[in-house]
Length: 129
Image 1 (cartoon, rainbow, N blue to C red):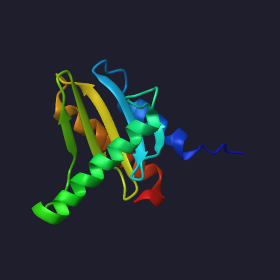
Image 2: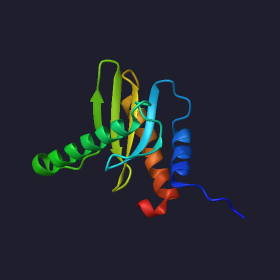
Image 3: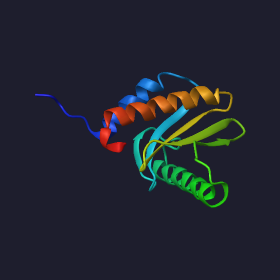
């Protein structure tokens, strides 16, 4: 009999495999667009729900700006802080991937790994497409 995995377990496994031991990556999490932590590790271990909600609000705000002002497709959000970067991208119509890294990390490399997570998630969780 084959053992079934939870959605959270599958997402955690994908994250672990695509963001293997890169010391510059602080956290990788999958959050719902409503602000719930689904899988991964939050940048704020003490307050993962707050961090997830803030990421969802940031993405929602950027989407609203795109719709109202720019009329362009949103690819990702990049926030640069003094020593850290925060990158948010859409996984599906209901999920986001949120990554925090050292500021010195190559953004294109991080986005490439994020896209691998997104692609694998859509392949392994077909109903998310």
